[in-house]
Amino acid sequence: MKYYILFGPPGAGKGTHAGAVAQKYNLKHISTGELLRAEIAAGTELGRQAKTLIDAGSLVPDSVVEGMIESAFDTIKGVDGFLLDGFPRNLAQARDLDAILEKRGESVTGVVSLMIEDETIRKRIAHRAAIEGRADDASEATINNRIQTYHAQTEPLIAFYKAAGKYHEADVNGWDIETNRARVLAVMEQIG
Ligand code: ADP
Image 1 (cartoon, rainbow, N blue to C red):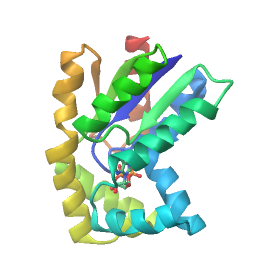
Image 2: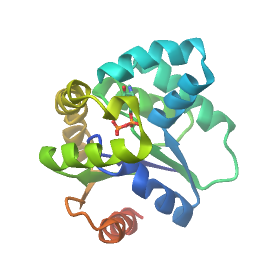
Image 3: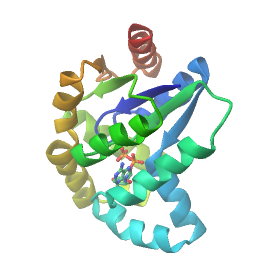
């Protein structure tokens, strides 16, 4: 099985490109953000707890997202691998993912990192807020905290995966979705 990580700051376009990548390589796309929003929509206790944190622009506890990831690995069949979107998001999650995969005799195949600048992040999220109506895209304070959380907790994963020789970048600063998608797919080819 292949285990790809689609990495990048909020608003980089992980969700926008994941579908095409997953289809081309017969991967199951797993977005921890989408799974959490489904829990909120279903009105579960987990969703209720997650909503407070998501609306504040903070991360939900590692154990929550790791449980979701492990259960997806256990139950989803008929694919050649997984495309992880929004996970891991801090060093503890990255280390735990390695341990989860090691137990299964597997390892991370490669990281596709979507590179955009903070100013572009703000514009993309403002654009998406108008289309998708996500509560965590609507408030300036939440967006600021998500960008801060990204730099403080998620960005250190770049060095972690570089050290593992698994890190690859795609520049997606431009607004042309097709160009960006082609860059993402080119990186997938490079990883193999
Ligand atoms: P984006 O990357 O655009 O911010 P996501 O849908 O990936 O959107 O995530 C939305 C929110 O869900 C995050 O701000 C965070 O609160 C929560 N979340 C998603 N994935 C994780 C994760 N791996 N660990 C902790 N919290 C997460």
